[in-house]
Amino acid sequence: MPVDDVISAPQSADLLIPLIPGVVFQFHRSHSGKMRFSYLEGGGESLEHIDRQQLTADANPLIKQLTDSDYPKIMSAIERSARWMLPLSTRFRLPFPKDKPRWIAVSAKPASAADGVIWSGIMMDITEQVAEEQRLRRLCDTDPLTSLPNRRKLMLHLNHLSSLSARHGTPFSIMIADIDHFKQINDRWGHLEGDSILKQLATRTQALLRCEDMVARLGGEEFMVVLPLTPLQQCHKLANRLRDAIANYDFGIGAGQVTLSIGVAEYRCGEPLDSLITRADQALYSAKDIGRDCVCLLP
Image (tube, rainbow, N blue to C red; front, side, top):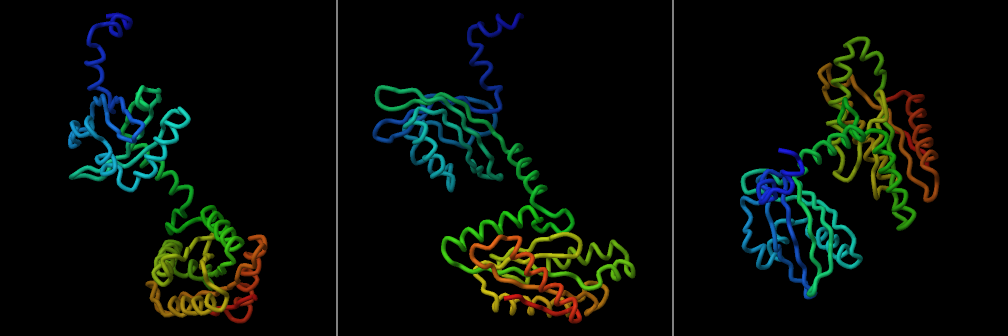
């Protein structure tokens, strides 16, 4: 049958809509704020456990229940679309009784109605797309060996903290930690053992610090710890605690075989981040120069 004949054939839409991996809908919001779906049809699992009759009569409570923490975002998108007659485009997580939530994308066009606004559009399951986006984001932000944040994510975090510091006058400090004689460890025990030590160090450091602190891998055997709301002297104490814990931890080659030299510095309000990192680097070099397995600071 020619394509034109299929499109113009009676009931072709009724036959096609159940095959679509999404939901076709018309959604109405009155001037008083009452919301309801005047039309809601489609394929997939999205509607199987949803009370369609309630959505048709009064969708307000069910929308709040189904969108959960995404509810304010959904309502803001609806309000913006209604006020300016702009296309409605948003996404939310739809809970399932016996499975993980699914990500749903909404795309609809508004039109004025006698007693409010009516949208005609489609909802699509984009769970796999969101999962791929998250995977790519992790690749962009994560060191593949240690699973720590990489330099890119670290710099974004430092920029955020420096903005907060400038706005509110809050302190933050950083440590730069380097594994002492790491080349000798690789030469003696092999690179696979060296990689294992780097991964263990990442895990151990995260466990020893606070949940708000960030540990990132700068490269090689060098790491940075970022401590929000932490002045220099407190950072120095935390660095010594970390250094001591690592020195007494057995990484599989004997306790005391892996030690850290650490340089610490506190952010000076308004200074370039390059300057902060340089000062922490200089403190690290001082720690190396005076014998390693120690902490140095630069005020």
